[in-house]
Image 1 (cartoon, rainbow, N blue to C red):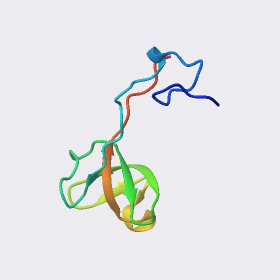
Image 2: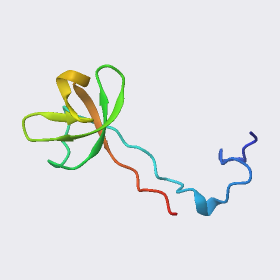
Image 3: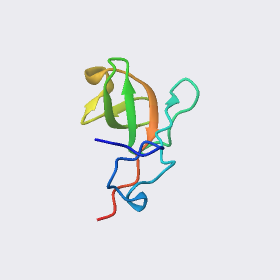
Length: 83
């Protein structure tokens, strides 16, 4: 697929893309997310899941983090698409 100068696939209108909406990963050691907020998690196993921090432990997917791998980074979920 050909792309234009900024990497947007040809034929996709700029209005369909949110230029600048980039995932910003935050190291767990630097800052924790707000409790109970669903966030993207990047685990020590190199996997990405939706999870939430519960104050003293993580729920990753529908499991405790020790089943899925301990999160090392987190990011806010992207906005859902416009339908």
